[in-house]
Image (cartoon, rainbow, N blue to C red; front, side, top):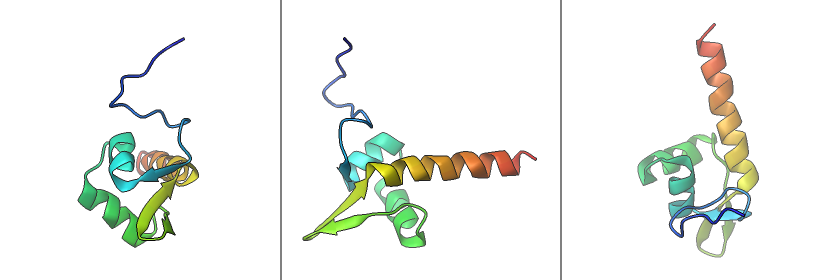
Length: 74
């Protein structure tokens, strides 16, 4: 059994991420996260005043980046 460091998040442990947690998972800054949210490249939901990013949105965003990298390499 592997124990993750307390400051590291595992993608499979959480279903909804706060922006600061998504920043760590995606290794992006706050400005970059909000830019991706504004442009629709990264999806989010609202719970009250909190903006939360579903784990499925993170998976989709990574897939989008991989697709764009493939297309730019052709």
